[in-house]
Image (cartoon, rainbow over all chains, first blue to last red; front, side, top):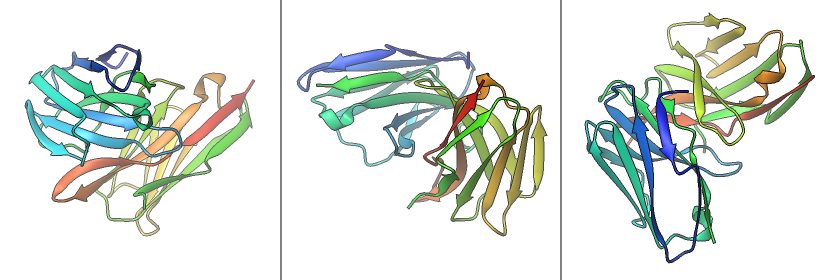
Amino acid sequence: ETGVTQTPRHLVMGMTNKKSLKCEQHLGHNAMYWYKQSAKKPLELMFVYSLEERVENNSVPSRFSPECPNSSHLFLHLHTLQPEDSALYLCASSQDASAHTDTQYFGPGTRLTVL
Amino acid sequence: SQQGEEDPQALSIQEGENATMNCSYKTSINNLQWYRQNSGRGLVHLILIRSNEREKHSGRLRVTLDTSKKSSSLLITASRAADTASYFCATDARSFGNEKLTFGTGTRLTIIP
């Protein structure tokens, strides 16, 4: 185990549903990340939070809404998604709030299917 | 275009053989990392090599870095069935003033028992 947990592990939702993905890190890290992994495509960085403040939004559609209530928890709220949003969503954390290129620790991911 | 690209895309070898994967990148880097991902799971960090290092070892893993060729290789010696996974290189890249890790599409390694 990497010290980063994600729930749920699998999620199937319709395009009109609202759901949330949860990530929790038990490592005392100061930066947290959301990535999207689609088949045969490079891992896409979606959001970066540093000390609970969003420091990067990689042109992600507004139907994805992140929330970081404290340094240990990260949420991704989903609303009116499209079938092409189906993917593995990975959460990660790293130690240093200012160095986002150091070693990252990943959760097991949430496999999302949008019908 | 991708910052990091792994080669080959897929590799199958017999258990006990050595596996070599390569990564090429385009811009200058401060460090390069290799990660492993088992099917449907998260990525696990394997090793980090800094731009002023040429080679690094960790157990059965050997990583080399050639900054003049903008390439790195990952060698897994005496492969085991448990090494079956996808392997990704990640480079630090500066985008719009922010540094971030950029991953390639990975090499899918299959170890045949």
